[in-house]
Image: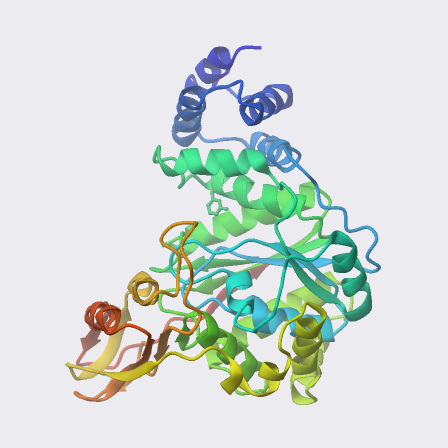
Length: 434
Ligand code: URA
């Protein structure tokens, strides 16, 4: 087989078969197919698309290009959740203990974040001493004992996707539905869970700006997961403005803890309840959605979800007392209000800009090597549809550097736009697919 012939085949609009896709991915991972040939292939796919069978073959080939996490030593149904990402997305920190408190097994291998704010692991490191550098044995025993563990990425999961995603990023071939779906699902399949619940975001702060594209991506990923024998569900949720109020690592952890105490922002609570319900159903712990939702409400009301987060922290060396006393989380030295320069109903918040403000303050990584400042970020007080008077606080900014604070503040004010007329809020959960 020659890569040249495969490129020609795809360029002319024909379909690649399983053997050809397996050859292309294994040889590319091994370094025998050069980037320039794979770039040409990605562009041919970008223009000519892929059939469902080709997409499924590509997903399986990438999933099997490296290690496959084996979770069979963990009893019960292992359920994973994946979000396509957004600003203020602290969902796993509240949701994982909530569903674990309902008996669902959470065994996650996670990486660190790049850009905007940190990833889940960075956020969890707001608890002093918390470590994801645990052994596989510790990981498996912990999930069997307390139902939840998150470990760092020690295995090489889907290396073909890592290489290909970096290539797509610099060849303008990221935004193709089949390529995105196979990229995400290859990593999820290699992560070993029996059931996967996806949170596909849509709106200005999301990959999928248009709702119909988000639904199409969700449907494609659900089908890919089912094809691989996993139980699947997906929701499509709004990311036209930041999720909840807090953006920044420790600030987001605090908001997740408030949510476990029953005092979360309404959009975030709705998201956790919707995803949690799907995770409990996928894990076979409830007979219907109403029962699953009631279980989630119970574990918040009786404090077992909060206790589960504390147990999880303790099991991985973290300071569990911060779960019950959030003043122990990292704190910034400068805390200031950002006063509105305008009056009116908030019409739009440019979501990505709020993420960039947190990055400027030091809350995200510009490069893989950058250190994250866990304490900094923003807590919004006004979201779309809210009325704001001139001089009223739009947000509280948490900083450790006056220069960075000034830059972030200027950018923050430009991210808001106002209207004289009342503004309708977007529906938050757009739909559920199974
Ligand atoms: N996220 C991924 O992991 N892959 C894509 O292709 C796009 C978003």
